[in-house]
Amino acid sequence: MTMWIYDDAREMADFQMFQKEVRRLEGEYLEIRVLLRDAEEGLRADPHNAYLAAKVRYLTKRLKDLEGRGPRLASDHPLEISLWAPPHG
Image (tube, rainbow, N blue to C red; front, side, top):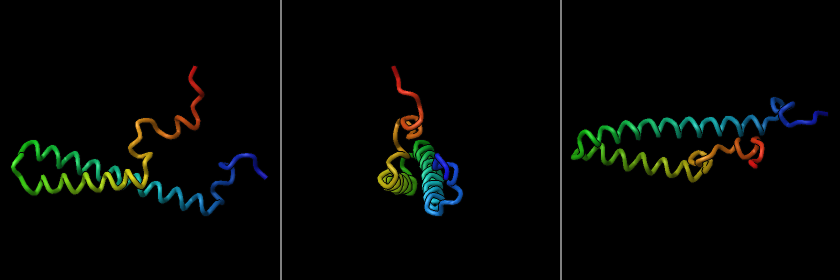
């Protein structure tokens, strides 16, 4: 018997499935952020482009949906800091 969850984390199928899902969600979030950045940059260069305006609206909506499913993606402070950092003061 181990004392820490991380000692047998490799053996826990549920934990591995959770890790895969989180990584997939983070990858999708990053990809959408990059596409949104590029689309907004293009829209600033050509503000009358209807295609880019629609793309920015669509990507923004998808980004908000992902942030709703994984609120820690958009938080100001990473969850790891509050879990593992020593208390202030």
